[in-house]
Image (cartoon, rainbow, N blue to C red; front, side):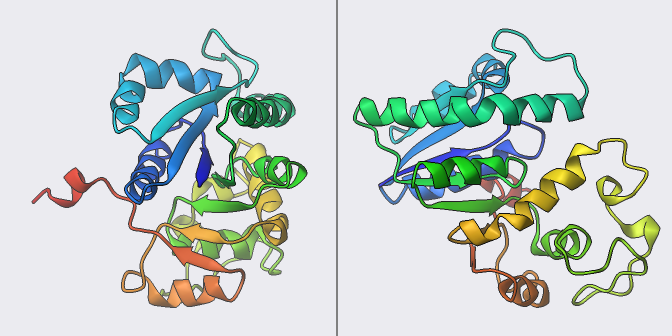
Length: 237
């Protein structure tokens, strides 16, 4: 089995993906970590790529986001728009190139912030799942706001196991004052595509947030793979 994990090398994204990749690789599964050409500079400069690939069953590959040799000096909305426009074709070409070289991808896992990857996997007839790198609580909140549940961002919001949440309690990216218009669009597109994925892979476990997990299970098939926290952090006093 050969699983491709598609992700952005942004803050808070890389560690959960690396933890998940390590879990899969320890079971003898071949893993390709696919991120953008902009991310390549960050990963290779820090020596992370060589360290991860030294494990033997994990390889890094890169697809174009339009800024192949420099860090983009654009706002987030413009970057994400261009990433989707170029990434669809570039990622598909990468998968086809790997297959031609005897490394056929048999499963794709995407991050929540690249929902268009689901379309690429569907076109290539490769099964796909979404790795939700945040908690089930955040997942259920975003579903209420962006997933068509009818809340329309109204407050207070009631979530399983928590007191009422008011405006000051909510993630800033979900509020009308959020300057990045691409975020609501991306999350809305993600929930709209869940019918085309096998399952959501949740960064949680039953005893951590049981009520939130039960809610998420009622929305779409979910498999818990967490907590995806580096062991070194768990061992800190």
